[in-house]
Length: 288
Image 1 (tube, rainbow, N blue to C red):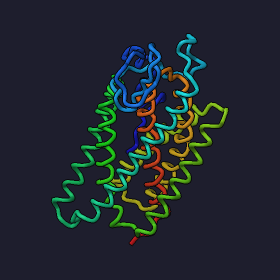
Image 2: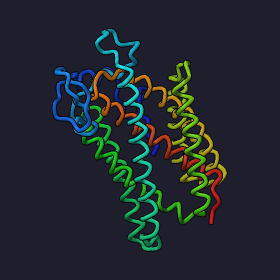
Image 3: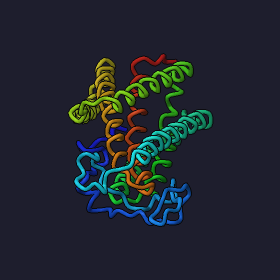
C-alpha cells in the first residue's frame, strides 16, 4: 500500500505531463450538478464530467495566465469533494473488511490463495488508476478507486483474526483524529511542506527495502521499528498532501476540473489514512 513513486505525487504525474495530456474545456451542457458555462447556465458535473479534461495543477500563484487562476468557490468545492471521495473509499473498505471477516474461512487454503490474488489485483488496479490519472480518464479512475477500496477491505479483513475488535475500532478513531489534525495543519500552514513530502517518500522507499529484508531476517523488533519509520513518513506525507490539495484546488476554473483534481487527491489521502491506521494498529493494537 505504499504508493509514492514521484516527488510530485505518487501517481508519477506532474504539471508538464498533465498539460500535454489535457486541454482545458468548460463548455459542457450535460451535467449532474450545475456550474456555469459560457451561456450562463448552471452546469456542474460531480460525476457526469469525469471524462472532461483537466487544467494545469500547479498552484495558482505559479500559473502565468490570469485566466488559469481558480475561483475561491471552485477551490472550496474541490477540497470538500476530495475529502468526501476519500471518506467514501474508507467507508467502503471498512464495510468490505467486516463482511469478509465474517464470511471467509481463513483456515481454508483456498481462502489464503485468494488473499494473495487480492494483493496482486490491488497492485494491478493501482497501476491502472495511475495510468488513467496521467491520461485524464477520471471516470475510469473513479471506478478503479472504488474497486481498489473493495480489494483493500478484503485484504485487511485478516486483521480481525490477529487483533481484538475493540482495539481495531479504537485505533481506527485514533487514526482518524490524527489524520484530521495533520490534514488541517497542512491546509493552514504557510510554510512549504514539499521538502517534508520528499523526505517522507524517501523514507517509504527505505521502509519497502527493510520490509523485504525482514522477510528473510524474521525479526519482530525490526518489524516494529519499520512500522515506526513508516508512521513517521506518512505523518509528514499526509500534511504535505493536504497542502498539495489546497494548492491544486486553487487552479480550478470550472466544475469540470473540480472532480478530476478532487479524485486524484482523494486517492492520495485515502492511502495516507490507510497506512497511518495500519501502522498504528501494528504498534499499539492488542492481539488476540
